[in-house]
Length: 477
Image (cartoon, rainbow, N blue to C red; front, side, top):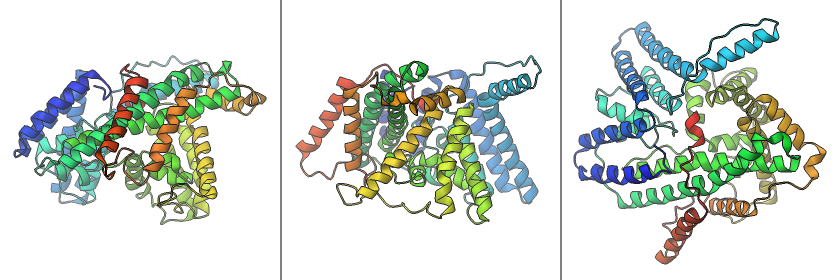
């Protein structure tokens, strides 16, 4: 079920109404949430509910076993069982054909002609996200950060809570599970802010991302036919497409959770206003970056080891993060390129220079801040070309055309109205960069002004939004 579908527009009010009818019975609420989450997930393909339920039971059971085991080697055994089975399922569904075809290509280049058997495996929506939810739970139990819950319903809600089930944010048991295990009371202020964040998420998805996609698909699918100037426009539009699409999903997820009395982890913090690539990665897909930091980077030694090993650990994080996004060498290249961007900051110990909000308390950034933002944005645009390209060859060809004489020709696509809408997005988020989202405007004193802003956003969605129920990009990851 898509957030931008008529089905979800009917589903959410029903769940919301039934949920708050049982305000004083949180166990009933949890059962209702679990049932609703399974309906939400099964709407896509009911067959894969079995995989979700199995993954949930696996980590619930191994978590109990890890906690009860008295000897360390038994604790480690149950942890390995969970990790191997989880990653085994993830590897099969997401990477089987990729490895088989890559191996066949390698043998062909060596002069062999293998007959590699592959099957077309359907990638279950959200498998990367709910797998990481479960793994973080068993890791935290193993590291004695939390005690396992004995209530299977509560744990199942943590794993399969429908707002975050298919595209995150990637939650931690230390953050979400305590909220599941205690009563929730309706808070009008939180619910109202949730509705505002949902509205802004729909604007970013339906008005910005989906309209950008119309041009991006034309340009990237026929990149060999266009000039460098047109390809630059395509790359910039994809940069806003993926931001509007993914951060729009996260806004809707966080807003929906707030309607139900939950606070999810923030996933985006206006990343395109970053002054260097390190700041960008502290503000983009925050839940994934922090997951790899806590469960991979720190166990490898983090930054407490020699500089050479810190560089190694950093490259591992970025390459694994890239590969997590999909079974294509383009994602690995995207991760590797970001690691290269990060390297100068790391070697000069400047990767923590910009941890505050840019131009805090000011209307405009300084000239130096503006230039830093522009450079970081340009590097990000270049990296996104690998992310969007069908293969490595297309990515290099695309970039090669950009850096050719045709860069100085007149582009074939100049969607002025779309760039105007992107301008509205950028200005709104710049003005609200000290807030959690752009429509967090309850501080505006005059009610008519607030409602005028809401009306403008709604009218923009009705006038410019694409009502095609386009899937979210991160569903494929």
